[in-house]
Each structure stands twice: as C-alpha cells, then as structure tokens.
Amino acid sequence: MIVKRLLRILAVTVLLVAGWQAPATASPVFSPSDWNAALEKVIHADVTQSVTLPNGDVLWVFGDTTRINGVPTTGPYGYPHDAFARQTAGTLTFKALPGPYGYGWQQVPNWSDNTYFWMSTPIVDSGTLYVLGERIQGVSPFTVVGSYVAVFNASTLAFQRIVPVPTGATGKTKWGGVARTATGWWITGTHGVPCSYGTNCSVGDMAFVPFGGLATTTQWGVHNNVIPATTNIGTTMALRRTPAGWDIFTKRGGAYGGTEIERLTANSVTGAWTVNGTWPAPSPADTVTYDVAVHPEQVANTGQILTSYNVNGNDTEYHPRFLYLSL
Image 1: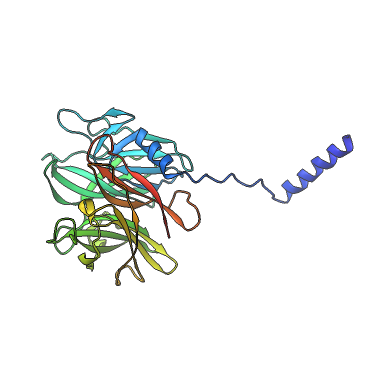
Image 2: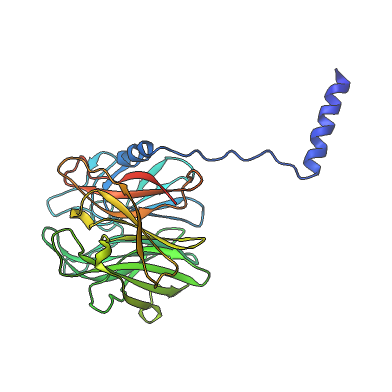
C-alpha cells in the first residue's frame, strides 16, 4: 500500500516537473433564453454592445435605460441615456455600474443645453475606453445633433472627456459597428435617405481609424456611400472579419422593416456588399426591433456567433434579445 502511494506521488511529481497542468474548465455555451433572462434582471435598455476590458471582464454599454435591478430609473425630468454593466467573463453574472451624471446610473454628463449622449459602440484601445454615440436633443420626438466619442479610463471606467467625430459627407452619419485590424479600426455607419416607410431608408458608410486616433477628427478616414440603400440595411451594422473577407449583420429595414436580421458579405470593407442570408428576429406584440450587435468575446459553438438585437415598445419588453447566428 505504501509502495503504491509512493509510486503515485512520484508519477504526479514527474508530470508537474515536465510542465503538465490539468486542463482548464471550458466556459459553457449559454442558451439564448439564458442570456435574455440574465440581462433582463439587471437592466432594461437599448443600444446593447459589449467589449472586453483589460482585466478580462466584459463591459456592456447601453443607451436609454428605464430599469436597473428591477427598479425604475425614470424620474420627473427623464432617465439615464447611457449606462454600463460589467460581466464576469465566462459567466452570466452581470452588475450594473453606478454613474455620477444623473439618475444614479448615467456615465456621461449632459451638455449645458440639455442635449445628452446616447452611447452605442465601445472600443478598448491601449488602456483607453472609447464609446461612440450620438448627441441628442429631446426625447420624443428627438433630433440627432452630431456624432461624438466619449473617452474613459479602461481600468477604472472614469469618464474623462467627450469630443465630436466626423459625420460623413451629409453630416448625418451615425456610427455603430467596429472591427479591429492589424493597424486600427474599421467602423461602420449609416445615414438616412428618402425612402418608403421601413424600406431602403439607409446608406452605409465606412471609416478607418488608426490605433490611438479615435478621439482625433483628422485621424478618421471616411468612405461615403459604400453600401446602397437597396440592400435594406438597418441603422446599425455589426461588422466582423472572416477568413474570406467581411460580414455585416444588421436589422433588415431598421425598426419598422419587419423582423429579420440580414447578413451582407464583401471581399473588402469598401468593396461591393451583397445580401447573403437572413434569420428571424422575433418581436413581441406591439414592439419594434432594431440595432443588431455581435459579441465575439462570448463563448459560442463552432461556426456560430452570439448576436443581440434591441426591442422597444413598452417597459416590460424593453431589453435585448439574443440568438446565435451561423457564420
């Protein structure tokens, strides 16, 4: 018995000396319903996107926010127009992060004229968190005053400043999707054009920004009118690189264009884009859906990517829905 125990200890010692380690436990692939339920408990909001922070946690950013931890955030003067939640990587543990700039949760201060920042796209670049979004006047109806980027410390998430960014040839481009390259960032945007209700209402623009240049207007290289309105893209285009080129996922026709997500493909970001597949994006009764985002930092089965879209129409249904799309 003693001999067997000594042999077992010796075998383990040899493996450790040789550098052997027990395999790490893989993070599970959570179901779309698990994602829906986990985030719905923490926040009711729209414009849902995510990014990995320097410490490995995932930051989720949101636009208009009406409920946190089941408690309404609305007050006599409004509600937060931007909010953060932190996710422990590989889990469905989310924590809404208090904000100092209104209603207990808002992360960016309003301007002195009461315009506010409606955040959309988070990017971590060399220790700095940049969040793209729009400066908005009013609530219902509202007017987009311009496109901006808010700058934060990526480790502490402390707000530092907010500056304008280019808005394309028409001055109306709203930026919404991002993909990293070896030298910088490709960013997708759209601007509206005359259209029939819910059909062919947006044209796609692109911008390339080198690392470190997101808060410097002169560093943005904007390419106008890359994707025609006949592709029926939505307001936001989620961009990702593939072995063969590029994919875009977008809500077909925007908020009033039905209940489908479409994929567009191209060999290059500024090349010819074609529609190449659609998926259902179910909408609860009396609601609309919009603003597709992909979450490549989340675990998914081979050949799939976690995707979200926003639902709006009433407070009960006002939270993102998730699904896995095939690549």
